[in-house]
Image (cartoon, rainbow, N blue to C red; front, side, top):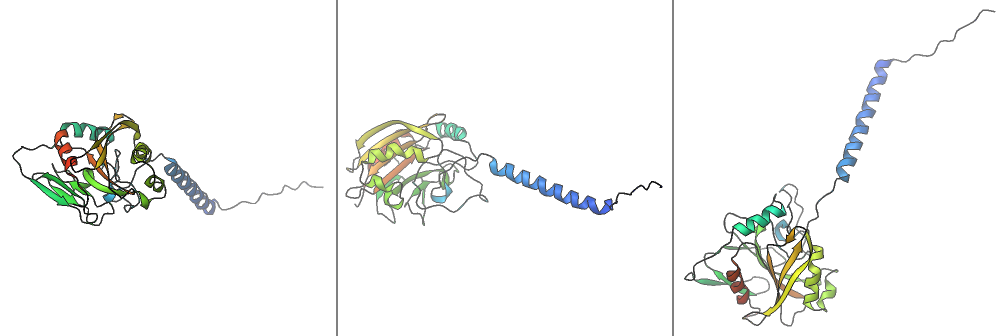
Length: 250
């Protein structure tokens, strides 16, 4: 009996290679997308105009629409780190001569008023939930220098409980909702010259103490509202004078 050797079937390798190559490319794409998705992303709080508090803002193409239920907070120039903004805030301070006249501004939504030197240019956020005004000085955009606005605690489920609590309790919890804030360094109570009870706050940041002075003013007979001022570029005594000028319903 003769031995027969069976032959293994052979395939056309030119037809197999494209299939293998396609599967390899798909696998590479899946791994790349999974890596991109898992990369850490900095947290931000979206404010009027897409402002973020003490952290880098997205580019114009990356910005999502502003959310009306987020608290008004400080500000930072797009594409700058918190450290760069601290250094800039320490270098650039707006001041003016005592002879410069002051002008009074009345907000369009809530009707609160405040005064500023005529040389300090302001721009309102016309479609803004917070009825906010920003400084447009020294070629810095208004999104980077919000000066004053109104927070409505009733507009957010997480903040609504503070309507019935003291406003100091709200301020003490405010930092936990902001990017790069780690606590409260100091709170000082005062009453401004228009009779509004206020709190001057220094927040703690991951890198030290915030260079911005934050002021919260209670609104008479409206426990759901707080006027919030934040100072990044105004000389300290001048900012205090602006705070003293803030009035409600006058």
